[in-house]
Image (cartoon, rainbow, N blue to C red):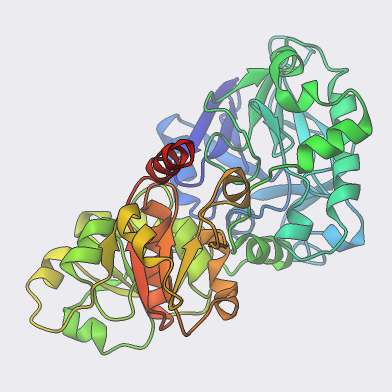
Amino acid sequence: MYFKQLYEQKLSQYAYLIGCQQTGEAIIVDPMRDIDQYVREAEQQDFTITAAVDTHIHADYISGLREFAARGIKVYASDEGGEDWKYEWLIDSDYDFELLKDGDTFSLGNIKFDVVYTPGHTPESLSFLVTDGDATDQPMGMLTGDFVFVGDVGRPDLLETAAGQVGAMKPAARELYKSVEEFKGLPEYLQVWPAHGSGSACGKALGAVPESTVGYELRFSPAFKASGSEQEFVDFILDGQPEPPLYFGRMKQVNKEGPALLGELPQPGHMTVDELMAQEGVIIDSRDKHSFMKDGHLPGSLLSTFEDEFNTIAGSYVEADSDIYLIVEKVNVEQAVRDLIRVGLDNIRGFATPDDLESWSGTLEYINAIDFDEAENLRMDNHKQVLDVRKATEYEEGHIPGALNIAHTRLAVHLDDLPRDKELLVHCASGRRASYASALLARAGFQVQWIDDDFEKWEQENAKSAEG
């Protein structure tokens, strides 16, 4: 059996390429939308992808399952979770597909996949026990999707916090507890192959180690340690979950109803800055935050630095049907396109480079940067308002008196909750999240000052003042 874990850093996502070396067939598990990467990887290993499968309807990226189906590849998907959680785009389609229920099996050459229904994170969630039939009749490991991570389990609150289904999280947490109890009965030697690692918003404490074992998770995962009773587990798993990025609800719906077929990657053209400025749409500037703030940026542009949060910020701040124009290094254009289409932002029309911007003779906009000492002097002014864009859990642990709190990835739908008659002093823990939020707020017409400073410094100085 050939087995390879394929990691995507920005979304902290793992897909799996599993191949039968006797037949040359391979299956891809939890693929993203730009499936050419998997086809290329399989060909390099002398495999042909003949099947694809999703563990569940994803909320954090657009699945590649439909892209594979459209190319004639057989796809597998869950038939669990009730009528509201079906893969609607598969039903009554002409695609080659098979819907799976608990206890089903399917094979790829000598490799067998046993289907295990593991609801909780989502109602339709499946996991797969993988057996290399050429070596044994016992499973080697389990593809757990978003059910069990290294050091955590999948959050059960997203149907409520991301998709807006009021009252869904507690029943989902109880379903997750039942799945956890079933998981405890598995052989401890089984390897655990999750769909996400550290940095994903699909859990609250995912580990950076790419795989684990059943036994290790039972002994050391905080989630399993808190599973002594159903109520203890429910209380633990719902406490402290981070605010989901705004685009999660949209991804869930798109993957359920059927994403638009991508085919080839969009090919945005290189434009002059004047040409770019003449367009209707959204400009995403991928430069570093200090260049954006201090060196200047195009009026109304958003900041989403070409780092780990690039597609999360874009997905949370840009509407899916918007035309998008980029300020990006030419060498990064293809990757930026991949990042954006993975979160359903397809209309990427053109780009200009940072060098183009630097040589442009037009008028730029700037956002003033201050530190916490300056903010402390300003915040007592009735015409100023501190806005804390950290997570609610961070805010609860300590915050500036009188500060409003809205997580940066949820800010776009809370603009009406902010005072238009006050200048906003925007901060996070280090200045990074606040830089994204400040650009969004400036685009929306707010007066903004960006606090580019370490919040821990403010806490320490205020603790000393209190002691004095």
